[in-house]
Each structure stands twice: as C-alpha cells, then as structure tokens.
Amino acid sequence: MKLKIIHETSYSYDTPVEALVQSLRLTPSVHEGQRVSEWRISVSGGQRGAAFRDGAGDWIEGWTVRGPVEEVTVQIEGLIETRDTAGVLRGHRESVSPIVYLRSTPATKADAGLKELAASVQGEDALDIAHRLSAAVSKAIAYTPGATESVTSAAEALELGQGVCQDHAHALIACARERGLPARYVSGYLHTSVGGKPHDAAHAWAEIHVGSLGWVGFDAANACCPDERYVRLGSGYDAQDAAPVRGMAFGISIESLDVRVHVEEIQQ
Image (tube, rainbow, N blue to C red):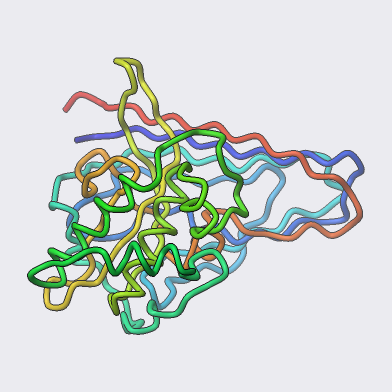
C-alpha cells in the first residue's frame, strides 16, 4: 500500500515566548514492513540542529525556534510504501536490550485490576499469551473517544472500562510486563475508515517481545496486529516517552495546540 501523509501540529501562545526547543521523532522507522519514498519535516521559523538514531532505532531531530514566538507549526509531508508482515517487526536495527522494557512507568504501572487481568490469560507459549492478552484488553476497555485524557493511566482506564488507543496500549503493556514479557508503546499513523468514511489519524499500539520471533505489534484498540495500513514512527516506555513531538518553551505563556493528520492511499 502506498500512503501519502500530511501531519501538522500548530502551537500558539497568548504571550510571545522567548524561544522554543523541540525534539522530533517524526521520521518513519526503517524495517521490512515500510519504505519511505519521500519525507519532509519543516518547522516554521525553525533551525534544524543535531539529528541521530537512538538505541531503540528511532530517528530524532532537534529544532530551535528563536523568539519572540507567537505561533509555530511543525509540518510533515511524505510518501511511504507499506506491506503486511503480520505485526512482526523484521529488519529493524536497535541496540537496546528488550529486557529494559520490563520497567513500568506511572502510566503503565499494574494495579490489582491489571494484575488480575494479566493472570486470567493462559496460553501455550509467549506469542499465544500476547495474543490473548491483547484480546482481553480489547474486551475490558471499550473504545470511546473523549472518555479519557492524555494523563490517564492504564489502571484508571481499566477501572473506567473505556478509553482510546493510548489507553489500550498502556493497559496491554502493563499486562505483558506483569507476565514477564517486555513491552513498549509505539506511535505512528493508521489509514482506515469508520462507517464507510475516511478516518485518518495519528495512532498508537503496543509491541511485545516474544522470544526468537522478536518484537510483534498488537493493536488492542482495533483487535488486530498492525498490517499495511499502519505506519510506524517510534517507540518508548509509554506515550510520553514515545511522543512524536517533545519540547520546551522559554517564557511564561499559555500554550494552545491544534493537530491535523491526513493519511491517503495513493494508487500504485
């Protein structure tokens, strides 16, 4: 599948800030399931700084915007070809040991409810357990836009019984780690439709390390493994760690955020 992606993130400030520093994890991962044809990142009024590939295999760029800054827009435009690898992350080079992803964070800490959910699953091997954990999370947390916030933890989403893709990913990560399986949060894009209408947006899912097979993606929000509709950007311990855009504004101001994402299939 060939996809065209446009992603704009605009920040505005009620009082101009002195400067803005950003770390962008907005370049698609390099692996067998996707190949970039064209990709351009721009930051209005920004100057590109250092760029590097971290230990998890993610490409990170630093940008600086000198003030006074009232508004700044981060824009991504690109073409990428994807194919279905049944969720298996093949050909992705990274130096970090999977063991480090057994560490929990405030967003993925397992409480009594998550521990009970993780223990309720039985399977023949690690891969089977991972699939069953994903199915259990899908059943336990109904996909409900607006039901949670960005700071909602996996435990809170499970107790509420509702959430969005971020909550499904956090809950699955918590359950997998509880069963001794390294798990991490993945940010990216998903091309799909809802009710026959295009529904293109930024998306998130989880990856679980299952022995010799390596990292395998699980999207509990959609009850499936990532296929050719998915574009992988980067990963982390949780949503905050894997955020595509992280930064700091220098000055006292109230920040407003507007995000627009469009993913379109291009005929071969």
